[in-house]
Every structure is written in structure tokens, then in C-alpha cells.
Length: 70
Image 1 (cartoon, rainbow, N blue to C red):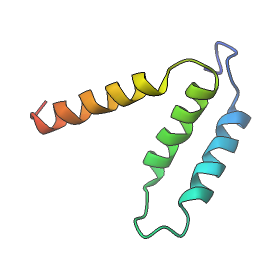
Image 2: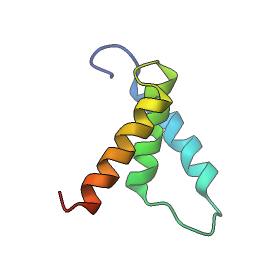
Image 3: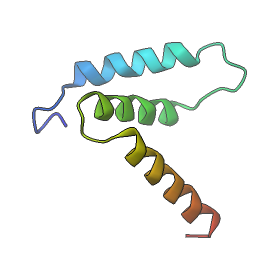
Image 4: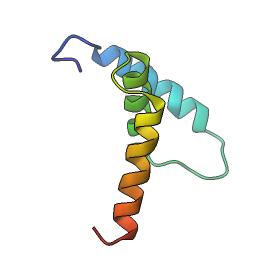
């Protein structure tokens, strides 16, 4: 995204800070990489690179593959 000029590292850093702040204090800790992914997804959504429906479909497909042993 940075190489194509869509976003920059500061935008991603700010998203990561927001995601981390939103998860702090929750009963279930969210791992760093899950927060990193959530920040990246939010940035992609914000810049119109993907829709919520596309993200949901891909997440569902990946979860299904994992349960099927792929």
C-alpha cells in the first residue's frame, strides 16, 4: 500500500494504535498479530481497496480451510 502511494506507515501506525487502545482492558487478550491484521484491514477498508463483504468472505473461506485440514 505504501509503495503504490495508497497509504503510508504513519497511517498504519495510527490504525494500530487505535486498534490496540480499543482492545486494552478486554477480558480476552488479542495477540499482536491479530491487532496488526485488524489495523491493516481497517486501512484497506478506509481506502476502498476491499469491502466488508469481501473481507468477511475471505475470513470465512480461510477459517473453513483451516477446519478442513488445509
